[in-house]
Length: 377
Image (cartoon, rainbow, N blue to C red; front, side):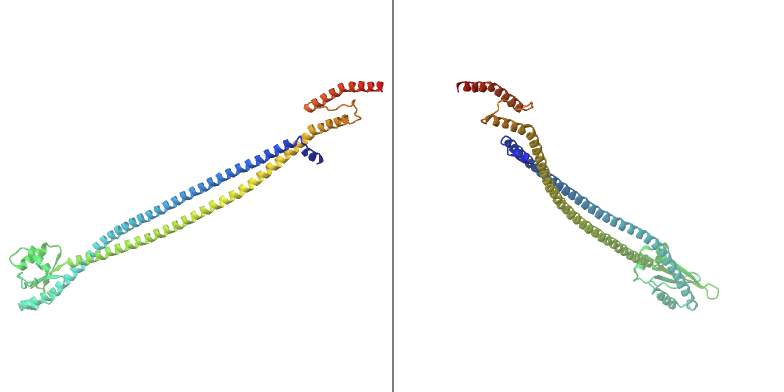
């Protein structure tokens, strides 16, 4: 340690040590500056990358939300269309079945009514009581479905001719029919009209036919009931479609809200990640700068120590030997026979050899001067 301290106090090596110290300090400062710049660039790149990833994620989530919204709207439209088509087809089937049932019931009722009118008519026919038969026809026409009732005798002569001319359906038959009288026109038009069912019953009280009753029944009521049913089904289809649309719209709104919440959460997470990553990188950079500085300082001190040892062994020790010999010569009792013993092939060895040659040349002169002084003394 004392040798190292003596080397550090050496005036010859002090500039070298100062230059090395300044170089070491400059190296540390440059390394710290480069590290700081690299870390700043790394933090900026990391923040930019996280920001870009966040924006891309936000765009993808927003696009996914739009796709979900569009898919739900498309699903709502398809479901509503399919529901309407399915219910419409089912309605058509039900209408056909219901039409058949209603028409069958109407015809059965018309046949039963005709049989009833035939059953109560024999006495009036026997008595040729046309007003009674006409009254029976009027009573039967109180049924909204009955258009007309015509009694005829065994020869086919019509006994009643009552028509309710206030009935628009009867007026329509009068306008379409052909014949001499109003009843002929109505009967002719009714036989050609699919909306009129003719029920005929024989009046045979004793097994012998004494007349007939012809009953005209309108099937328009069936169409009206089917139209009303159709309107109810249409309202049901619209209500079902609105219900489906509202349900899917609610689901779409919930999905959009959930995606928006997820998007906000993702943005917050990305921002927090960017901040945390930046803080981690900053801490790592500070630790790295400290480690680099400490490492460079230790390496520099090691280099100085090795350099001091090398210089102390190869330079300073030789210089001390040369200085000791020169100091001995400079003393009053200097022994000029003494030589600088340095086995070195460097500049210090050359200097020691030159000193030895100078002393070798000086030694005879000093000896001769001494002898002259003795003789003259």
